[in-house]
Image (cartoon, rainbow over all chains, first blue to last red; front, side, top):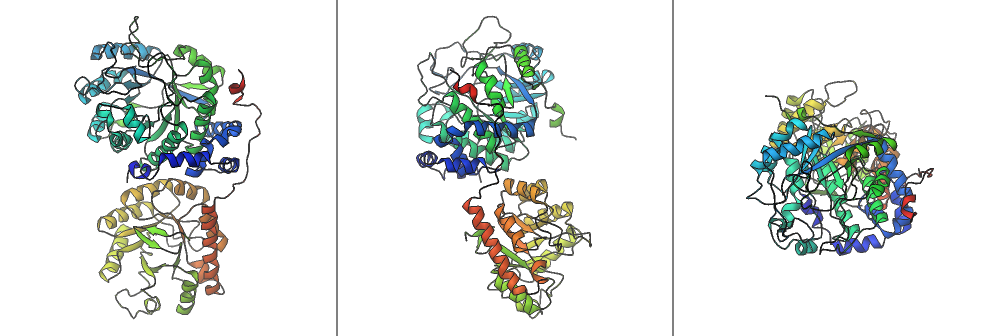
Length: 373
Length: 257
């Protein structure tokens, strides 16, 4: 059984209709139950839940503190390549965009790793586009091997691999996988991914399962906010998280909240998500999956990030550069997206302390991945 | 009531009953019939499984009930496996309730030997329903090994104390990908209802029926308890309120423009 078997049972239109039909009584029932089922999930994602946002936030906050205490894990993304053969219409690195392309050499990767390490980070997220000829599994394995001495946890947010590829990553020292479905709506997915290997919705959807089967210990999912209707997208993301937590119970599931903002580029998100809706989304996800990591990146502004933290967030990035070579170069090249919170890691660390959180730089050890004999 | 599905087979009743400890076969049959059960367990050590004229087996209508042989009395995996194979050789369907209870006093299940036996029996094609302590991680290992259910105990067998392992059973129910049958310790219909309200897929009861003054009436009472609990679960219980009163609002920032 795979998540395909589950998602194929649903019609997104029907799901949206059900969500929009939820009443405040449904919301109260969901708020008062220990665990949300699909019905409760729909209720909290509904317009009817908007007046209950403060109560949702209080409960999400309490659950998060019980499970994670007053700690926030810090990580940094490391862009190793912006080569891409996909046509994702919303992405700055899309193959048709005329931007300078770069894949870091192993020496350049190490230089970046040193710069990030010097800022205090021990959790790193390797990021690439999808370009099988320029960036392959062997290259990524070599990158992981090279930066291993600097980091205790290495995650990847790259093109989807086969299970064998993930096994190769685990052997090279990678312990985490992040992969966003972008949109769970098939029709919209086809529209937004006109060409490239990413066109294959099913292969992408089953990526977390292949990663889990290969033994990756952290699996991160999410949808790109702004593309599809956020209520149905969040509903399917929630079901996906529940499915993964049940079937890959040795792995920690995390959910990210990347949001597209109306930007200077030509692509305007058709379904922009407002700040209160983002808050509703974070609280709902926490009430659904009490133990999942919830991740907020530097796409959001400093002020908003600081306020969203107590609603259930457990991991944040800081001082991120979203272009290959961005940490060690002085001259900035093209970024995948413009970051909004441009505080330094030290400033973010201080903010966390001021708000009563312990900033956690290391919460993993490479030793876990070494199997005896 | 909605159907219970185990290993692809549908059952109308979510109450399973055991056949041990009754004062007479007549009392056992009365309890079974009134309970509406579709699945009845039989201890292999108690019956002469080869012999259709066996005193107890002769009283069980094999057309009506799925006879679920159990390995009670087995002290380790090897003994349990041997018992299960004997039952299949005697013509039973390849269903087995796996019980490995080396401690003869509390009859608590041995997690290590149970997992070992389950792995072997699943490979041999058995549909395995393991009796376990309410241990969520063990439940996961067993479902990975391919068992058809997990059967966590509510309280030690025969104690009639109810769902004492409630918090752990709640975790098992939350996480399981196979049906969860609460087995052992349920002493009253309200206990069965409680397990079903929590979202258990079924319950198994034996002692509470066998030692009742009127086993037939108690079988009927448990039937109602199980149905009430299931219906309440499906209807969506209103949980007790623990609404937090906001001392420092967390969402005020959204309104400060």
